[in-house]
Length: 172
Image 1 (cartoon, rainbow, N blue to C red):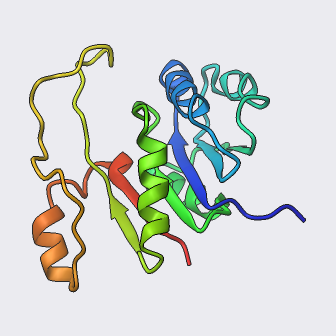
Image 2 (image 1 turned 90 degrees about the vertical axis):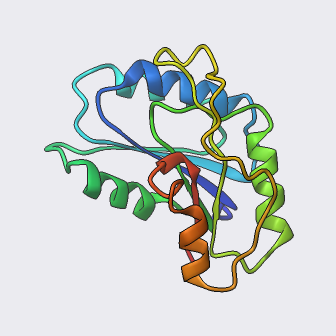
Image 3 (image 1 turned 180 degrees about the vertical axis):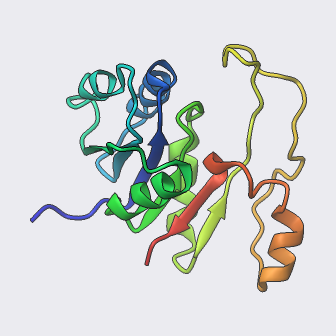
């Protein structure tokens, strides 16, 4: 039996084949044997299945499941996490990209503190074409922080918690 990956990229998607292609390109450029990519397709009528198939040889571990009829967004997110095999699950929106060096930074942080239950990453804003970075940085905190209680974590991170691609959770 194949060993479980350390980190699963969990991508719920629906009808965004071209955005998904760009996301998978950004992950493939940094992929390591420690990761898997899990995609839960919510009955996309576009070329999502073909886009995913084009990455089968570029991503060491790729798990694609298509739902028909559609689950709707919330259940699709739950489904993709349930499909994942990694100790950690990095939720990722299908219209986002993994920044160069992002995977290595997250893997290092997860391995540095073995007791983590989750990790909230930073975010960089782009224009609607995802080609030009916007100068505005929503999150000013640039250092790592550890919280000892839920209330202080929520107060500090509340503005980030709504961004799916900023969330890495421990599935154990």
